[in-house]
Length: 253
Ligand SMILES: NC(=O)c1ccc[n+]([C@@H]2O[C@H](COP(=O)([O-])OP(=O)(O)OC[C@H]3O[C@@H](n4cnc5c(N)ncnc54)[C@H](OP(=O)(O)O)[C@@H]3O)[C@@H](O)[C@H]2O)c1
Image (cartoon, rainbow, N blue to C red; front, side, top):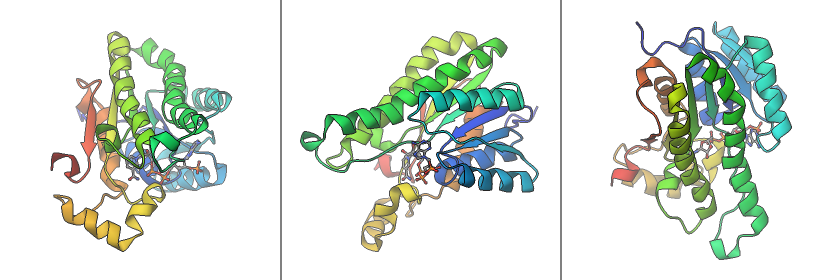
């Protein structure tokens, strides 16, 4: 048995038009899964889906804004209609609209961050659960962050949401383990995507950070995709409720 194999599996990856989500979708497809590429922009999703199909994979673009429950219901419904079922869910898209002290944060900002980064993942997980429970097999992956493991004076609210991902994974792992649904997090460190532009586009900030990293470089989106394959496949079948950190060694210093 090839334990990293995903042939016959169907995966939804939110925020997969670029960055970490795209890397995850591409690696799941290379391992054999049919993947649904999703973000707010249909064109960008179609470009990624087309490139996966051109490489011999199976991919479909379905746009959805994670903040809208009805759009997530459509995402899951349209996936079922196209591929029959859902075996793998990757909640990757997230929002970070606020940089600054907690004392100055508005309620609206807090609610938006928790809505997009936590509540939307709960909606999606609940939507795919019946498919997974029916076959007693499923893998849910939440893309958290090392930010959820330490304090911050700048992105503290975002970090609250990323710590919540880790707890959500533990809760769902306990609740749905008897149905053989596994729920885990990936916690990346700084990865060179649009999301982390403020860090990697400033040469001073970047080199200061890289000097401190045991691996001496910030991450690339491609550093994360393979971890999702492990968590989604039989290779990760006895793992649930966990958070895998992939940060170039930042957290162990
Ligand atoms: N980059 C890092 O250093 C880093 C570190 C730790 C954790 N993370 C986490 O990794 C995940 C992905 O981040 P990334 O760095 O890959 O970001 P990115 O390159 O900016 O990509 C974000 C993706 O999410 C989509 N998206 C954004 N808002 C959305 C919404 N409301 N509804 C649906 N899709 C939405 C974007 O497409 P559209 O604009 O078309 O919607 C895009 O596909 C996030 O959960 C982030 O917290 C990133």
